[in-house]
Structure formats: structure tokens, C-alpha cells
Length: 329
Ligand code: NAI
Image 1 (tube, rainbow, N blue to C red):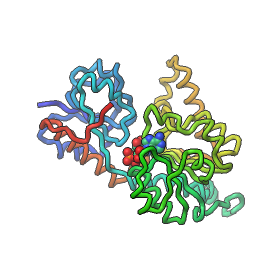
Image 2: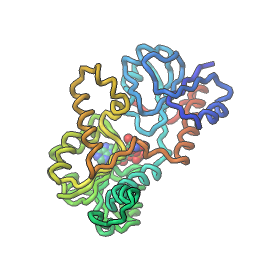
Image 3: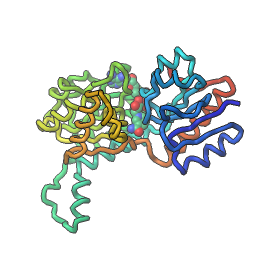
Image 4: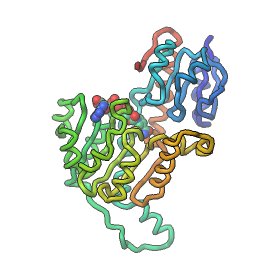
């Protein structure tokens, strides 16, 4: 009987896994996958810890990784293939959930919700400096028109926005059905008042938004990123925000976001690139026109339930020799 290690498990999730996997030997851990965990045949992880080739070498028993996420950029798929480790993800769980969070960030920026609430908490009901802007009539530029991107588009249309989109694999049926237009990246950047990123992080999409792209953006535009931090070059974003080219940013994800949580590790790191990024993220954290949430877009009761259910199904399918939802290098 294979043993299963499920990492990064919250207290409320424990009873579900115990119940759903009662015929298996399972070990639940509150921490992310550590450097020297117990040896298990199957592990389940979230996105907070990179599963590298080096880490896999230390754990020769692992045969399957069930990531409790849609994105799998935290797992070295090439190393898994070499070691014949099967990787399964949760392809569908939060398309509406993540799009709703992107809108929460957008509305919080457009209507200055955070400073307004901070002010009333202090006992002031002054509206000075709290004038926001309407979404109706504005143009949204959606990068990535997959499951989450399409939900974002549906919501944007509901607000009366025009939608331009970019995707190397355009879905023309969706464009007709939802009423949006595919265009080139330079046109999207030049015309969009709000840009929302919904593409996966891959070698090709890393720094999809860099200095050149930001210089092409409409002055005063807003950028929303609920996808992966690595899609945006953080230094270029900071420069764009400081110059006013970008008026505001709503970010659920940051480049190298793990290091914000484990900052002490930076004290011993010799990796100056990561130290610089941590510093840039700190500057972002304290900017008035930037809203940052802790990779929380997926985190609704309904979506978490769907993640747990699919993860259990993925583990069971693998253990009877019929892996499902597999992802490959
Ligand atoms: P999906 O696979 O349905 O859609 C991704 C779309 O991006 C595809 O249509 C693809 O063709 C497109 N794409 C690929 N390269 C592109 C490029 N260079 N430019 C523009 N588009 C490109 O994925 P889904 O479910 O919509 O998720 C999108 C991303 O959202 C995931 O990869 C994940 O990183 C992120 N995510 C974040 C969560 C959070 O809690 N913040 C939760 C769930 C997903």
C-alpha cells in the first residue's frame, strides 16, 4: 500500500482527507514540502514550494505528485519525466473564483475602497481624494482567454466594458459568444484602460509584461495579475508605477513570492537577484496605488472543496494505475 504525504494542509481540510482516503496510509502536514520530509510514494503539494530536480533526487520513493493547483510552474516537469514521476493538477476548480478575485482587486482600485474604509475606521467621513472612476465604457485588455480569462471577460461585459484580448490560441467561438475582439499585444497595450493577466507562467510567458510593454501601455492604466508573479518584470512594473504610466496595480501573485514568506532565508542567500526582488516586492507592498493579496484568489469555500475532491480523485486514479489530469513537460 503506497503511503501518501499531503503538505500545506489547513486544519479544516484534515477531516476531509482522513475520510476520503480512509483506505490509504496518509500523513498530513501543516508545513509546505520541506527539504527533508518523510519518504512517501505519493505527495500532494500546493504552490508555495518549488519541487526541483535536486529535491526529487533526495526523495527516490516519490512516484506521483498531486499538486492542488491549476498552475504547475513550481514543479520541474522535465525532472519528473526523467524520474518517471507522474504529476496531476486540478485543471478546473476556480475559473469563476479567480476571476471574481481579479474583479475584487479591480473594483477596490477603481473605487478606492481601501483608503475609504481606512478613513471611516479612523472616524473621518471626508470624501476628499476618494474620487474613483467608472468601469462602464472602459476597455479591458485580457491576456489569456482560457477558463479564467473567459469568466473575467463575462464579468467585464456585465459592467459594460469593451474587451480586447490576446491569446496565441484564440477561441473564436468564445469571442463571438461573449462579444470580445482578439487583437495584437501592441494594440491591446495601447488601447486598454485595464489589463488583466490570465496566461500560465511558462518559459515563453515569463516577463510577458516588461519595460517595453509598459512603455506601450496607455498612460494611467491599471494592471491586474491573479495568474503568476513571473508574468510581470517587477522592476519594470515599479518604474511604470513611479512614472505614472501605470496608475494602479492589483496583484494576487508576486515574482518569487515564497521569499516574502520566508524572508529570514534571504539572510543566508547568496542569490543577489532574489534579494533585489524581495526588496522590490517590499517597495510594491507599501505603495498606495498597489493592492497585494497573498495568492488568495483561489481561496473560496467552494473552490477549496473542489480542489480537495479532485486531488483525492487524482490520487485514487493513480493508485489503480489510471492516472488522470496529468501534466507534462
Ligand atoms: P487555461 O489553461 O484555461 O487558460 C490559459 C490561457 O492562456 C490559454 O488560453 C492559453 O492559450 C493562454 N496563453 C498561453 N500563453 C499565452 C500568451 N503568451 N499570451 C496570452 N495568452 C496565453 O488556464 P486558467 O484555468 O484560465 O488559469 C490561468 C492561470 O491562472 C493558471 O495558469 C494559473 O497560473 C493561474 N491561477 C491562479 C490562481 C490564484 O489563486 N491566484 C488560481 C488558479 C489559477
